[in-house]
Length: 254
Image (tube, rainbow, N blue to C red):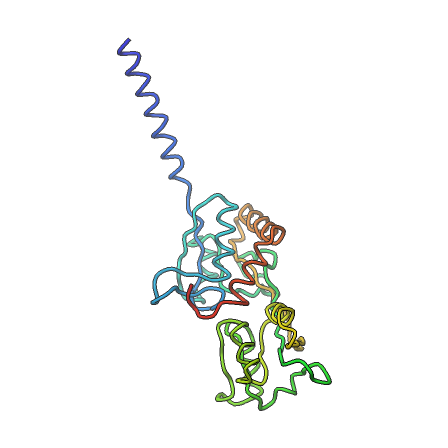
């Protein structure tokens, strides 16, 4: 009887250990990013090791869909796509614009964000604001989008104020610290809806579509990524990420 019980306990112990090992062997989803493109990917407080931002929230959602823990690998931007193609990382998230032409060894997901510059001004103008109206004005620009580059074509450097959130830019606008704010269209539209004293207009610049880079050979992961992106749009998480990271984030810190 004792031998039977001992054998039973040994079997149970073996099953327990095997199950634990099997659980631990599930590989992490390795996400490559630079940590240098706020508000999409940047380092946490005191330049600590944690990387946060809109893209990292997307990466966490993809890892959850894949039922794998998330691991972030930080590297220079120019090394990200080669690392994906070589299998050194599973995916790359770094405000990556989906290219018109295919890149060897890399496949992009469906777009998860569409970026288009817009201008926000105080309401009351006789006509919607246009790009020429901004020439030589004091302009607030949202870091991480095309606003800073556009502002440089319109006014001198001392007339450009940069902000890590759309909200911070429009607060300065409402306090008459800047004449206009150049943001991405989505935060501009949200903030104008929240503040009736503001109005916005789309600027005539090309649209950029951001995507997740995956190794071209990993077709299964491409499917998982696209399903995860579709789900976070459908369940409202994408709107939460936009509000948290693109509209209200004040500083490049969590």
